Length: 140
Image 1 (tube, rainbow, N blue to C red):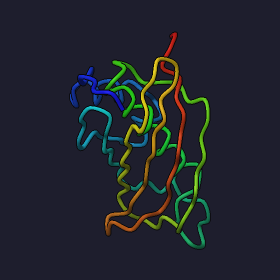
Image 2 (image 1 turned 180 degrees about the horizontal axis):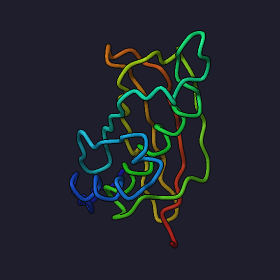
Image 3 (image 1 turned 90 degrees about the horizontal axis):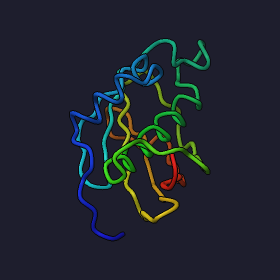
Image 4 (image 1 turned 90 degrees about the vertical axis):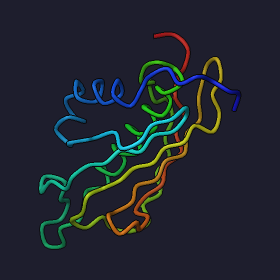
């Protein structure tokens, strides 16, 4: 990945996240941001539960965390969150009631697309899901 200067600070990224209704509802917070990488945290919400008998997070919640972290990792280079054009998710274990942490790293940043790897962990640092995404970097 070519060297890029960080376009948005952690505070600016947090401000943008706070204006995103879904991210705001999920309680997403920027824990760390650097050029091409970000760590987000999300407190547990009972609304994340997929199966009330087992009380683990719905896969769509984990996928949303991956997608959002990926978009904002690209924003550290692009200056704005990027639009997802492709996404693959691997669910590795259930996410039981716990704060959720999501790390995303830009692998490639080009004129038209960026590739990102992301991972969701629980508070015990156990890997719950991974994702590889492609984001649009050109245009709006």
